[in-house]
View 1 (cartoon, helix red, strand yellow):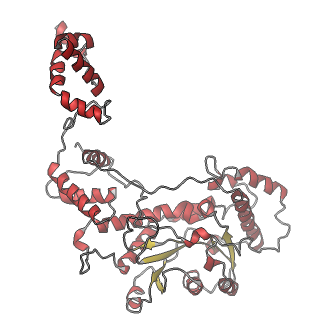
View 2 (tube, one colour; view 1 turned 60 degrees about the vertical axis):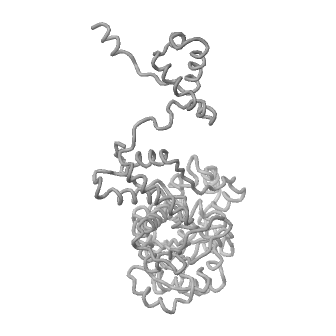
View 3 (cartoon, one colour; view 1 turned 120 degrees about the vertical axis):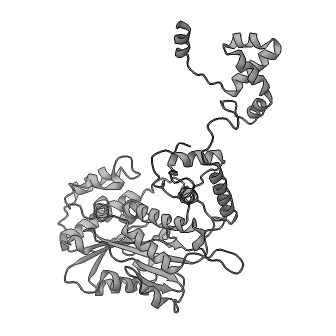
Length: 456
């Protein structure tokens, strides 16, 4: 009984490769029993390690001296056949220079196991173990961390004060304050280089009001669209137009304001957008005057700090857009191919539905909060300034909170009340000439996997 109790108290121990090789070396110099006594291990383990000497040496040579398990050790996968088919699919897709995301792997795995293993969940834990078993790694885009430009905080403060001056003068209602942003969506996968991305594109314009209402996406496709325009214009919930190069221009900006914002209103209105060249052109300014739309142009280089779309909307919008694309890409039965065997991109009508679904996925209350986080609908007295996202502790522009408080203490916002000229109306943001890619870049958020781990 005492021996049994003592045995029950024993704990399992694990040993790394370097330790095992030291024991083997001692066993070869003297004998296995002596090596077991010196290193306080079971003699059976010494015999086992001596038999594994070549494998241990190879692993140590590969820089895995701290590893505690040889290849093939550990628990085996419960669905090896499915995993082999899945791996073949991943290799095939990558050989065509197409992107494979974790969400695509999960969707494909669920499809492969639907009949043979309906209990399989394809959880986050399984995915991590599968990638480790098969030697797969995740590569994602990175951005170089840049120091905030010296003029950024003064620009942000000037922008915020301009909005407050407009609010004091015109008393805009939340439903009459608009924020707009363009997002480029590529219809084809990018190549191996990162110098430029070619292929068909669309540019959906997302517009929302400060009260949370989301207006129809305004989608710009490249080309003349003579054959497709009637078909695409019948798609509910979106407005589709074409341009020669696929980008917004002065004429389309005027068309956008008429069709989305609306030309008739008895209320004073405010449009907040970035310093893209067609937003600040003379043609656009004349149309803004005709529609009685005031503007607050976000200064160049500041959109990622103070634009509602960049700060809040786009993460949800792009994530949903990628999810739709990945689902489509992982389902080979819906693909079409050219005569040379290349896969065709998704149709324009399909992309329109993806854009609408992605925009619908952004909750209205999130939109409302985004205007508050970007200092658009805050009290003009500054009592809500702690809600400004880019000025919060830990954010790149956190010093702006104190600087804004100082400016507010010096400024009598009632003075110069008749001067509502936009200080950045002639600004031009070169960053906006290269719009953010959305649906096919590998910068995805973690997919919404089942948190329950599969037993494999």
